[in-house]
Length: 130
Image (cartoon, rainbow, N blue to C red; front, side):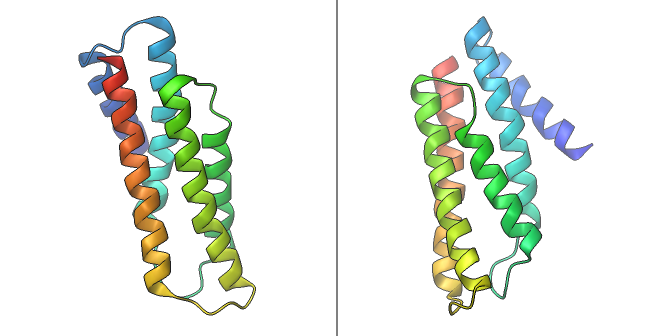
């Protein structure tokens, strides 16, 4: 229910900001759906310690979802940037799972970068639609 509410909330913002033409609305909807999943992931995700294999796999799936979005222009660039940052966090966590020393500061930096890129990507969609 929370995902539905967040997704509808972002969609409402997009509609109010003028994202009503066909291709723009579809691009914004595609991104909003994956954005909602990423928000839910980060709400449950923790830093430090050894991440669970399920968390690590979900991170990879989200990176793939952003890479596979059927969008173009600035929205595609933003989605690719989010995907790249999620992959960097994923690669770090795989290394920790495979025995590399955990570095909570590095993990926090990668996580923060991914979140910042995600927020910038949302802004691109909203600004591009107004």
